[in-house]
Image (cartoon, rainbow, N blue to C red; front, side, top):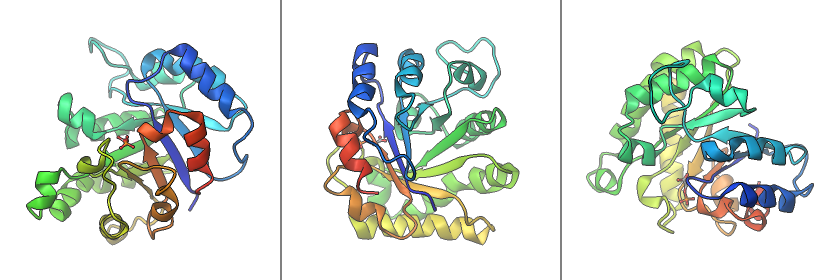
Length: 245
Ligand code: PGA
C-alpha cells in the first residue's frame, strides 16, 4: 500500500507563511511514493494550491459540508473546495467532533458528499483518554467505523478514501501512542474492515508524530503513514518526516 504523509496545519499560518513553506520545500521531495498532503485553512487554500505546484504535495481542506450550496454559515461545500483546486479534505477530526458538534452521522455525510464530488477523504476516528481508561477503545472504534463500513466503503468504487486513527490523548500533547498501542488499534480497525470484505483502505496514525518517532510508527503492520499536526508546520520537519517513509 502506498505510504502517506498528510500534514494538518489546523488554524495556523497566513498566506505569506504558506508561500514560504512551499518555497522551502522546493524540489526536495521524492517525486514518486510516498503520497504527500497538506491540509490548510480555507483562507490559505488558493494560495497553497498555487504555491504547491511542482512540489508533489496535494492540498486538502480540513472539513467540508455535505450540501452543494445553501444557508450554512461558516461552512464550505465540496464544490467550493474543488473550485479553488483542492484535491481532498479531512473529515471528522477530533477537534471538529469536540468543539463543533461533529458526530458519526454528520462526519459520514461530509465524507459522502466529498467523495461524490471526487474529492479524496481522510476520515478521522479515535478515542479519548477517559474512553481508553474505561476500556472502551475497541467498542468506540467499532461504533465510529460502522458508517464507514455500512455506507462509505460499499459505495466507494474508485473513490479515494483513507482512515486516520488519532487517539485524542496523543493529539498535540507530545504523548505518542506506543508502537504496541498503535498496533493494537490499527489491527482492530483493519480486522473490522476485513470482516466486512474491505482490505484496501489505508489507515494513517495521528497524534504527536515527530521526525524522531515516525519511522517506527509508519513501519508497523496496518499503518500506512501519518496525519501530522505540529510537526508538519515547518518545511524542515515536513522533509524529515517524508524521508521516514
Ligand atoms: P499533532 O496533531 O501531530 O500536533 O499531535 C495531529 C492531528 O491533530 O492531526
